[in-house]
Image (cartoon, rainbow, N blue to C red):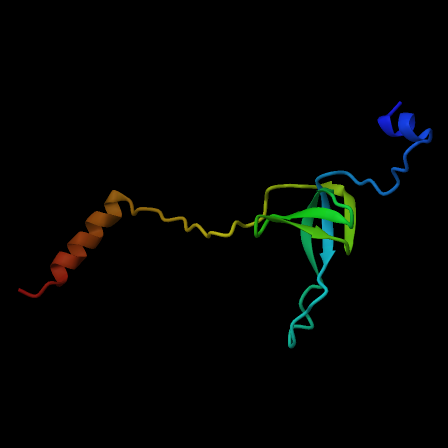
Length: 112
């Protein structure tokens, strides 16, 4: 028996409850002029409920927002596979053999 049942004497309605961490498609109400072919929704993830809607997490910006125009897909859950705000570049140092060849070319190109 839940506290709600004990206090009111009836079972709570849980039809609106969704799985936390589910993928959400949040409808964008404003689309700038000249961008009519842009996607009309953003992918976010459900992290909670508010009195007027759902609280969602945007993995690209790293912020939580309160949304009410949301389509929730309970079959796909949160995965941390989105790009971060900062971009990292993989830089590999040249191997020693390549450095030696480059040094020889550079030295041989210097006029004497």
